[in-house]
Length: 226
Image (cartoon, rainbow, N blue to C red; front, side):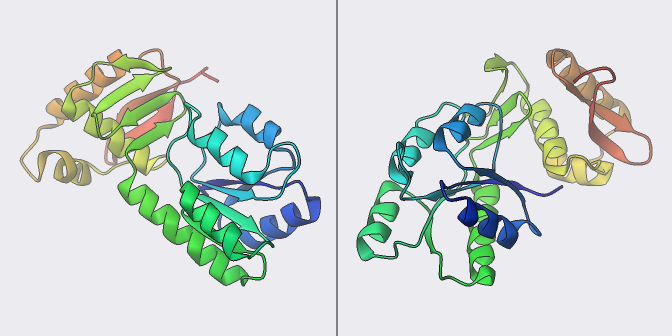
């Protein structure tokens, strides 16, 4: 499953060019109007955002401010991308908090490398994990469903985190035990109990955790759920 990134630019040709650069490595969502992006932002999770600087109505810098103050922002890396390669534009971009500045004359390989590097760092150090309607705050060790906090135990939270990271693939039992119980001997019944309790607490969710014989545990969509 490709990671999803968004690119916002009022120039259609720029959108097509950047999409062509990144589409082999990412699922690229393009938006010609910043407001259209903001309207969809509440219901979509991205691993990276690319913002043009010079746009009418809402410029890139103003859009950046709106994004980082949005309650659904997950802390993913934000790049400014522009043909304005002046020191002023670069310094303002980085001062605001963008992770990097991409000039349009940069080679495609360098663009991809920069974005992949920042995404990898984000994935390894992110403090919030989101999937569908569930959000896990790794700093506070809290889980919420539809913004309502769910009282998960520490082990339930770690099981959920492991299946989210592995989705749509299963997490082998040995890997699960190593990650959560640090290699201790754990009976299948113990895992079943934790999974059952986890699903009970998240019963209103579209997904559930299943124990799959010979595979481990896996996050799957409930039958009949949309």
